[in-house]
Image 1: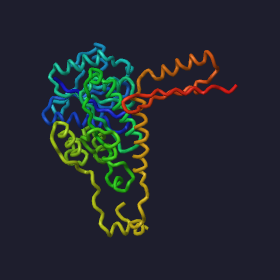
Image 2 (image 1 turned 90 degrees about the vertical axis):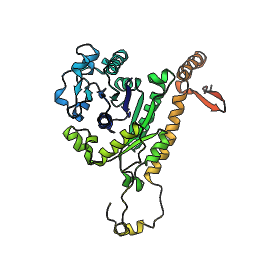
Image 3 (image 1 turned 60 degrees about the vertical axis):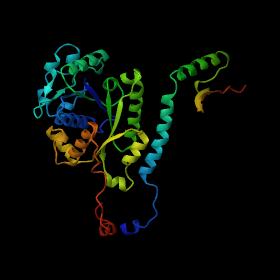
Image 4 (image 1 turned 45 degrees about the vertical axis):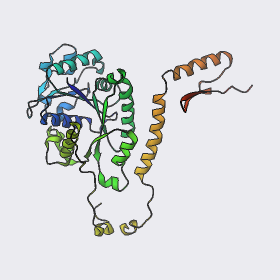
Length: 271
Length: 83
């Protein structure tokens, strides 16, 4: 049985694709056969973040419509042989994602022996997003400590709890909160919602806090999932999150501001 | 200036304001979400019935579902125009 993990947020630009790439690469690195699927039909970007943009021949929609086989469309990662990528279509309409078609592809991936199927949801609550949510066993809610992102995350939680397949069958999708772009210094200064604030409001179990980090842009520039930049703060924070997802108990890192000396506080330095 | 900042009384931070606003908004949105699906339809049909007898505008019928203990209270407000 494959586990479907949907990475979602409602709001755009909060780090869904970065997190999907990191999560998929992290699961593969931990030894699990993993595939990551881009559900953002029309605006694919996962291929770029994974660094496989020049190897896309067939995509998710081609497979659903029978124009290509799943084997033809799957792109095997060159860094890890147990990691594959299924790109979204650039040209097709988002309505091409039928519930039946998506379900069949997911079943087929499970039959092929993939243990984890990571679904990178598009922003919004339209078809691509609802399809990515529909089949979820787990949902990773990516949230920035910022009002509109938190509100949209709550909307997505509402959809998960009422419209997902599991919910309709009387079960529950396992929800995990992943806070990204976290800046402990600004939290200390009262300029940013703290992780506790966000957890209080959304009432979802925290799986990780990713600090605002230069490593994320660097990783996307070069097409390497940031989790593979093992020396970076964001890479370490994502590794911790993946370990927690797999059941490890790990303390949070990079969530407290470095202590300022009294002198620098008096002189107003270090801001 | 930073020196004086150390001793100034703590004002409410913008993060605290964000949290307060979100808590109010989200609890309101959750209430709507948890409400039964039939509420908008019910409101429209009641409006149609009232319209058969009295000329009223759409916004003159308000319908609300409140929870009191174990039971729900359906509150219907129809503002009739003065004659």
